[in-house]
Amino acid sequence: MGGISVGNAMQTKALLGLMIPFLGTVLGSACVLFMRDRLNPLVQRALTGFAAGVMVAASIWSLLVPAMEQAAHMRQWAFLPAVIGFWLGIFFLLLLDRTIPHLHMNSSKAEGPKCSLQKTTMLVLAVTLHNLPEGMAVGAVYAGWLSGEAGITAMGALALSLGIAIQNFPEGAIISMPLRAEGVSKGKAFRYGAFSGAVEPIGAVLTILMAGFIIPLLPYLLSFAAGAMVYVVVEELIPEMSEGSHSNLGTVLFAAGFTVMMALDVALG
Image (tube, rainbow, N blue to C red; front, top):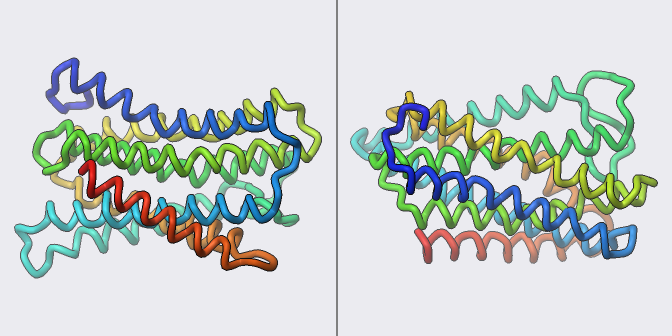
């Protein structure tokens, strides 16, 4: 797979692992098929906070820490690849944020270049935009496992996939149910929500294909994904979870999501 010499069994495990986060999005999007049309704002903030906590914990435990461990031969400069990759991820998402028209949840003003796209399309683009780094993160970790040179175990890679899938479940509901509230049919709202998560396995596979040729740069790739994920959390999820009254609910669920992802990574990794 992409220059990484592995057996069919490992490739199959990797492909299954890459699909787990997408499955989380699909299941979350399916909530629109049997729940009421509108998601309670408090529930939405709670789910957003939980997703943000998972993403931050994944960025630290599953991406930045392994990146620095792989650069341990640099001794006191072992942090350098993580810092460089992290900032490249930040700037990459900033570039996408400026060049792709999208509309954040509960916002009336679109971001990015002016366009004539429908509101529902820009909502889906916003979620798709922040799903990309999650796919890259899973792809980078599985690339490290497939290489056999990065000190990443199969269970460690699975932990990240499960963590992203857990936070994708509420994300799927958060995108599909507001679309239904905007007048989109239940079937279309489900398809749009599921489609927003399709970028994750695509991004993951592309990352693996790329990493197969640049395994020495894997620490930069892992931290790049971490930077991109942190950008999404700070720029989008934290403001959304803190809107209105009872904003402490989002904070508590952020802590819960962080704890769940940290426990997964340590228990399985």
